Image (cartoon, rainbow, N blue to C red; front, top):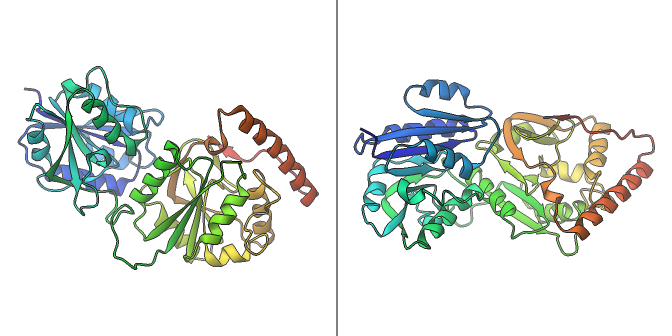
Length: 395
């Protein structure tokens, strides 16, 4: 007899979070009958856990990362259940999570049933970490190919356009990723320890929203996010980063490109490295290219290092290096001081290489080309003895 429900869990990393997720699934009743389909979406650290799950779950592996929407669709295509239940970012099901989702879809007018979060921070179906649909309703249209945090909203809208309304099943609850997620409400007056500065050409873009959602969902420490929109006219990279760092008032800061996705558990190892005396700590990039001298798309510092290694007071990067080579200039200062950047391999991120400066706008693309050439000339004039070469990249 085929299962009534198929639980579909796309995973891209974070073994500890994934283990908590599966422990939550295991706590559910066997009724209604269900199967578990896990999509290992080109993860970097899940192999030991997946070996333990063999025989208890159906496992699908991807050779390259698909993202939540496409990975979830892979699982849906393999599923045998009448109802498909999706878990995003390895959210942890609370006891009694599964039955209310199935019951909600017993109403023919309901096409999308969502779980609330255990802390009460998320009860809107469009932001759900866990949701269920009928397999028959998914046929044809499929899952919208949008960033993971936007899938629930896009799918519920697609179903609503067919006359099927969304519903939050209040008795179905999951714990959002992390014991204390950045998206959770915090006590008034609690001081953040970390400022995350995100420069961008378009603060309203899906890329920025996905970056913010990943930060909020995977940063347990109290934090603030500073978005610096420099898109009209473009100000490059140095100016928005400098502006964001001037706004920071916390003991630690992170500069993060808007095409970076921090993975679960990313921040504590960086903080530990800084506390141990590292001036600039960088996470390991687990897909795409990796610079081993200074992956400047995401790096962390203590407030003291910001002051110590700034080009000038209030100007961390040299503003004359508008778009390119400011990271190489900083690397030169750090090496001269005997404190080069340190790669913290237990802190992991994904990075869409150069997406943050990529554009389909021909005028902007032309500006980028001209500015990169100008920045190169300025860097060589500033460091005539430096030898510029291609960065050490590892694919």
